[in-house]
Length: 112
Image 1 (spheres, one colour):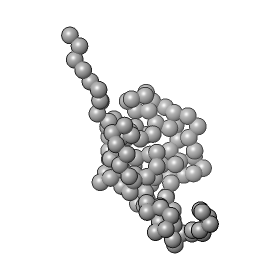
Image 2: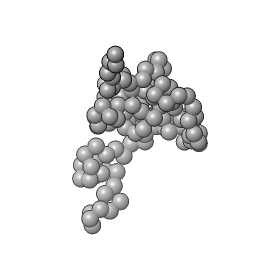
Image 3: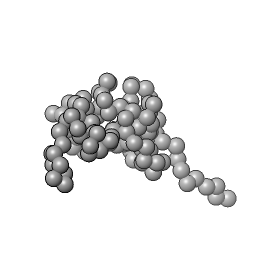
Image 4: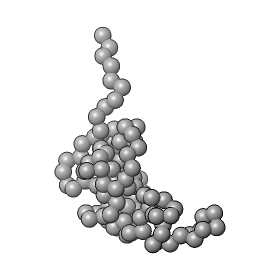
């Protein structure tokens, strides 16, 4: 890869181009099983119909993401962020098999 006339590769990508970059295999579950739609109910348990791009146990992307704030605390598979010690890289939040808990509601008000 070249950016502004500087060449980057797997050995200098994260030191010279982007500090959070990784050249490790993300260890997706199954790239042949890509999502084609969604199942579930929005705000409850909405998730892609196939999880081929989700991270498997031991992925270097688990708990290595950057915190983007509460507006982005939900993942594409309805697992609240962070589900572990930190946010995961990518659209999916890794769930070790526990119950999927949706993020807490915001902007609640009492109407009398």
